[in-house]
Each structure stands twice: as C-alpha cells, then as structure tokens.
Image (cartoon, rainbow, N blue to C red; front, side, top):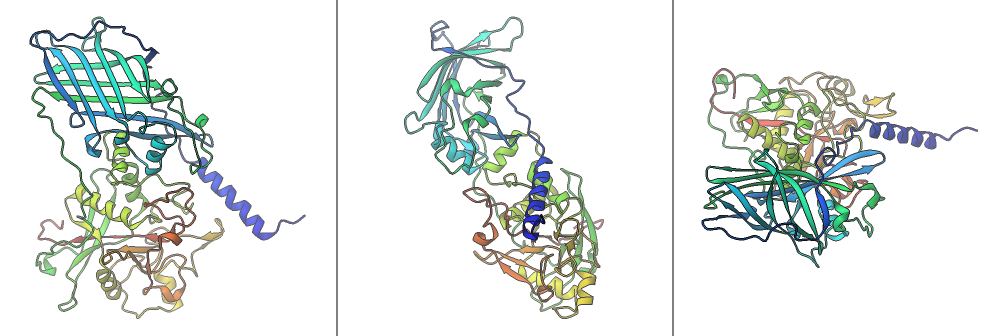
Length: 512
C-alpha cells in the first residue's frame, strides 16, 4: 500500500522533530548531591532564645538577603530546570533579624519572613503556576516564616547547622540544614545550599489546565534551596535598583563629525566574554543624504555570536541566567530546534523578536564599550542602495549571485527551504553579504512599528532589495505551543534575523 505524499511528508517532519528534540541536552538536577534538610514534626528542639547583654542585632531584608530555588521537571525523558526565588532585584519582600554575641562572634538566633507572592521566576508561566496551581497559596498564607538558632558542629566552625521552625503553606515543621556562617569585620555572612522535600509542605502541582500534559509526577520531589546573607550592623548594605531595561544600543547615538578618510574601511570585533569574532564594514555617506557614516556588520548575526548570550555563557554563575531572564534581559530557552535543523555553525540566527535583537545589541555594547545597535530603516536602505547599484528588483542571474532566496534555497536533504552559511553568495560593492536574502533583518522602527527589511530564503525574486514587513505577532507566533506566547521567539517567522550597526568615533589603531 502506497503512502500518500502529504502523509509521508508529515512522517518525515515528525521524525526530524523527534531527532532534533533528542539532541537537546538535559539539565542536571541541582538538588542532587546537596545535603538534605532534616524535616520532622514541629517541636521546640532548642533552648528558648534569650537576648544576651551586649548582643548585636542585624536587620535582614531583601537588600542584604537573597533566597533562590530550583526544581527539576521531566518532559519526555528530558530533565529541565526551573528557577526562582526572592531578591531585591525584583522588589521581593524579606524581613528578619540575626542576633549574635560580639564577644564570642557566635550567632544566637535568626528570624526571617518572606512574602510568598513577591517571588521571581525565569518564566511568566512558571510564576503563574507557582501562585495559582497549588504550589503556594498566598491568598491563604501570604508569608513563609523561619525562626531558629545556630547549632555548632564540632571543630568545623564557621561551618555548621541552623535549626528552627519553618512555616509554609500553613504547615509548620522543625527543620535542620547546613550553613556556613562567618563574622567578618562588621558584616555577618551566611551561605547555605541544601535540598528540601517539597511534599513536606504540600507544595504540589494541581493543574487546572493551561499547562499542557505536565503533572505533579513529572516534577522532582526535592527542591534545591540557596540562601545568601551579607548583613552589616548599621544596615549599610545596599544594592542598586534595577529598573526597566535601558534603550541604549537600540537607537543611533550621537555621531561625532569624523572625516571618512580617517576611518578604517573595516575592523574585526572580538566579544570579550566569548572570544567570538565578527567583522564590521564602513558605510561612507554623501552630503545631503540624511545619513551620517556608520559601520555595519559584514554578515548577519550568526548563532555563534547570538546563542552564548541567550544561554548566559558569559555569566559567572548558572543561577544568574534565571535572574537575567526574570528581569527580561535575556530570552527564555527556545522550544524545539531553534535553528529549524538548518545548522548552527556560521548560519544566521533567526526567529527572534525585535526585543531579543535589541537586548543583544545592548549586551554587545556593554561587552565591548562601543555603541552597537540595529540599523535605522534609512541606514538599511542607504547601505543596500550604495552596495547594490543595480535597481531592485534584480534579475534572476543577479539575484542568484548575491542572494539566498526562494529560487535557490531548496535543501533536498531537509525537504525544505533553508538558510545558507554566511558569505555563501557574493558581497555587494561595499563588501557586505546577504542584505538581499538569507534572512530578513530587524531595523530600528519608528514608535510602535516593528519592521524587518530585505529578502530572505523564502522570498520570491520581486522582494529582494525592496522587501519590507511589519511585525504581526499573531501570525508570526501562531503555532507557539504555550500560553502566553513567547515574546522572545517567533515560531512562524523563521525567516527573521538581524545585523548590527556601530556608531563611528575618533579612533586609533583602526578600532572605532
């Protein structure tokens, strides 16, 4: 019996998707390998807390105390981590005191209370689940509290244990967990990392729909808990408030008057955090054009440049990736095969929202000390016209030489149209590759209008050089699998990418 062609194509697609998913690496369950907190029925297992003469009390708050957690879930055999916690960076509410004897430099007691609904997590959907799906019940029990004492542990001081009464979700249990406590100058330092059985406090997933096939059985019982305190006697510890992401790096900066002949025609940029390199090309401009000289990426931004930023390869601690995502400074992890199985090495990054592209430019600016940004639409059109003096739309022969587009991008191995590696076609007369095709490119739009320019690997000939599309979130993310839909990745706009621009400035040694 012959399989009809549409069915055969569907089977191939499903197999490819399955293979792509199988190649996604699993995360390591952070709770594994940590010492387990000892939890028992509530009891007064320690002596009553008394205030000694001359005791010093340090105030604990979100400014000097952070609490983090991570929990593993299993999806189709893959271990994935979700992270969250409480921190001043997110306006979390933490209140408490730490009392200690300045003569012996030993802590006496701790009291901490945390407002449950002031937590952060790396995904909006996760936050909603934590507060509405049975994990936590802030409407009934808005605060979690801990009151305890420090327990010495042999000769291992300052390492030891903390023991006390912990109340969560209206359930109070006696708990003991390891901690490293140190009195240094005028600062009390406490660090702790341990695993806690969430079921002891009825932290269970009670889905009421909207979260796919996820069940409580898919979520690991043990949660990794991390505590960090740096409290001074005068409460002088403070942390810089983090507001809305700056728009630096998204719009053109002030371009100083610099003679074009004093500027290098090209330069190579190394990203310090990743050591990935890319090249920039000078676009000289004519008087009266309305555009001042600027540098533009010789190629579209590649996965080699983009993914280390997405994955937080530059961050010193893995936990910071979750915080960056919660602050909407980095994209959430993409679902499925982000490269659409086209390949990653020297291929243009694609399918990202303009917000993702702009924040990457901001990060790149912070990394390099230069002002990287998206091109304005006027800059894009000027660079294309100067580099491609043949009027658009170009002829088929001209298009085949300079562009990856609908007529030459079919990949027999994939059975689909696909991108090609950067510089697979000829550059334009300015030495810039792929402005006419491969992926369309985000530009800095005006107001609320988000625009991409240029042709792409699915474009017909008539769109090369003159292609322009306005962002349509409903259509571009129609098939995104979850609700709310991602603001970082567009499933149905796989042909969207970007390249960077850089403002010129007086330089030496050929480095703008």
